[in-house]
Amino acid sequence: MMELLSLGVLTRHGFTRRIGSRTIRQMNRCLSRHRLLITLLWAGILLAPITHAIPLTARLQAGLEDPAIARQVKELDWPALRRVYRALDGRPIWMSDQGPQEAARALRRRIHQALGDGLDPADYHLRRIESLWSRGDGNSRAWLELYLSDAFLRLGRELAVGYGHPRRVDVDWYIPPPSPPDVERQLIRIGQRRARVETSLARLEPPHPGYRALKDALGRYRRMALEGPWPRLAPGPILKRGDRGPRVLQLRRRLQREGYLDGPAADPTLFDERLERAVREFQRRNGRTVDGLVGRRTRASLNVPLERRIRQIQRNMERWRWLPRELGERYVLVNMAGYRLDYVENGEIRLSMRTVVGSRYRATPSFADRIRYLELNPEWKVPPRLARDRFLDKLRRDPQWLTRHHMRLYAGWYEGAMELDPRWVDWNAVDDLHFPYKIVQSPGPHNALGRIKFMFPNRFRIYLHDTLERDLFQRPIRTFSGGCIRLERPLALAGLLLGPDYPPDTLRELIRSNQPLRLDLPRPVPIYLLYWTAWAEDDGPLHFRRDVYGRDRLIAAPGSGGKRALLAAAP
Image (cartoon, helix red, strand yellow):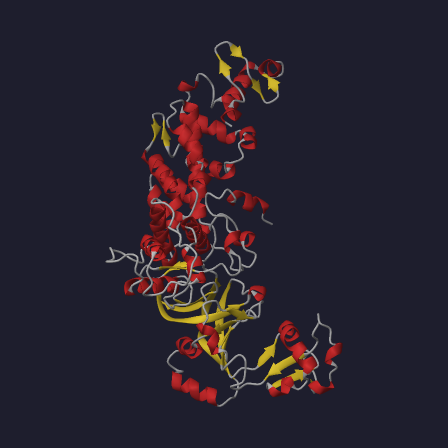
């Protein structure tokens, strides 16, 4: 690659090398000596043997303005580099005629630290920068200047908004990406000595506490990896308190490595009370049933390799970069992979609860909207696909099933559709692929949506709602809905959203009336339906969850070799 700039060479013995496809002697036939020398200096200045006399600024100008070089060296963002150096009147940012300056050393250190951001230093020309760093010739210094600037631009962009459009990576992500930062302006300020590398890049990172917590966790897990892989727990019977043996020792060492246990034990082969507490905490933070028993599922979580957990953290850090930098003074955040809802106000979680989310075949998409109103005692208009998949076989066996479940049948979804008696319909003749009728369940304690529905009208017809199936909240994996989000404590969320005008007693009284009622929020509240398989609590503990929708594997982890290929292949 480095020879690509050798498009023309001026030597003491004349013009002996080629410029493009023409030799110097061929060009001499049609150009005056004066024009020829200008052309040579413009195209070949970066590698001329007499380069010691050529200032670095002149080298940069020649390289930036030569279209042939840009066509050959495609890994650099030439348009951005030209804009930056024109704003600086061609002055170098990182280099002097004596070598790299302090700003260059600061950027080099920051590139090495990119792994701590869940990024790959190799994506920021690290190999090229290292190979050029100690070279003393003017041509190498010019190249190093350009590679450092391009590295800053790329690193700044990817720290701020990720390495590609989110929809190219995850087709179920519908949150518009944040606006790209003006990284060029930041680079110009560094060139003007008005900003520092470290502070400029730090300001580009996502400002969210959740991102910073994952970044801290990534550092801890990388330090764990320096000690080697985690010990594995061998297969065998369920381990419980009071058991003794070599597998208990394996379990103890495994939990010690991740920080669930510290200090020595009187008998490390005994499953004692302290070890049981550590197992319960591990189960809580890994989405397993919290019973203190180490069975097949808990053992599977314990045996997830450390390197895979590191990649999981990196991929969730990337998702944080896809979010707006400002989420709002108060907002609702639903984590589908964690089956959890948080209500956040002024940066603090005021309310948390369990949720039930869409099944793997009706996965809830990631999107953002605003909760605008609530419906008390809602009707349930059954989606046609759900009616076809869940109700059609029941109706073929028993047409009165709808009546017993307080449901009414209409001829269609158009306004004024006639109500039908389900006994009049030949259900065996209804197409398995097309359900033409509308089914509506009346309000009341029997309604599948429960007593409250939280509306943020959207293209997906997704909303939050109460539920009759309270037992589902006790299960560790809760993918049972048709896409909407079922809430464990809907009344508590309604009170926070509506404010002091609707205390819990008032809401309960309105619900007991069984009359449908719409309550508009004083001010719409943002809601974010997200997908985190790794997150950290405010006090530090890190949580992992299974990738139930298979979305983690779509994000290429740093060092996997698939990041740039993924972007190139994306639609």
